[in-house]
Length: 165
Image 1 (cartoon, rainbow, N blue to C red):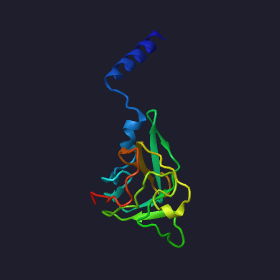
Image 2 (cartoon, rainbow, N blue to C red; image 1 turned 135 degrees about the vertical axis):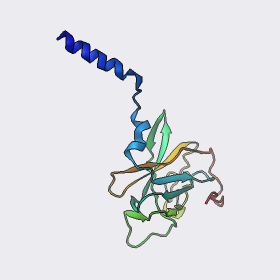
Image 3 (tube, rainbow, N blue to C red; image 1 turned 180 degrees about the horizontal axis):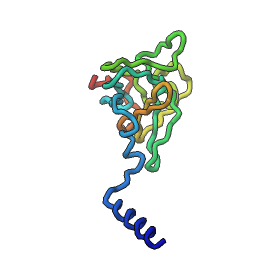
């Protein structure tokens, strides 16, 4: 019994030189970094790039807010759409071929209709704050997160261009 305790102690102390990374730091090992979500100059503008094989992505873009050190989904209705007209019939997923990129309609920081204002009669601006965009595969098994960006206290003018394209 004493030998088993000594061996267990030796095993535990020998592991001390290898720090354990929190789950947030090991995310890259769980999801291949083939889908990149890049922020553009105008807050709320993004580019989605596929550096791997063809992927089928869920159409919903999660808008997450950083609150007290945690990321929380804002439940904002943002979609992986390049224009405001709805496709017939509405689709739940988008195929992004290998090597392709797309620039969805920008989010203007409003709680609803932030991509296409005419679709939402009641809006409130939710800035300032730190936000990020996230996408999932159509089957929900993979997730990709963009870098954080700052939303200013006032919304940018509607005609501000999305640079870095």
